Length: 82
Image 1: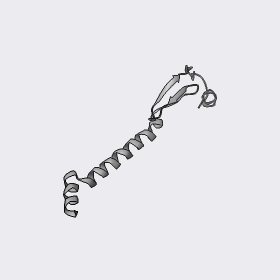
Image 2: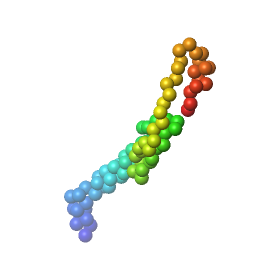
Image 3: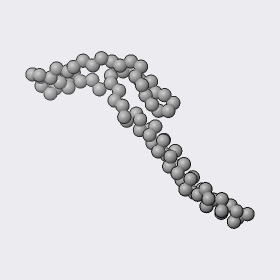
Image 4: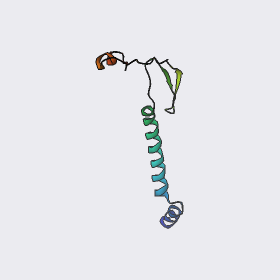
């Protein structure tokens, strides 16, 4: 029986297959957890997050340009929203 199990294990390369599956699961988990880092969500935006970790805009806010000409750094920073 041991010889038969070893033969089957060698034929399907069980350990490598198991390690490959674990690596694939870990890569998919990493991809899903890093998806939020791949998107900047602006003030006023409504974003839907799906079960697979992907995101889509439900409503995208209009951005007002910041006028910086002739202003000090303090005045510019007062108009920035984060």
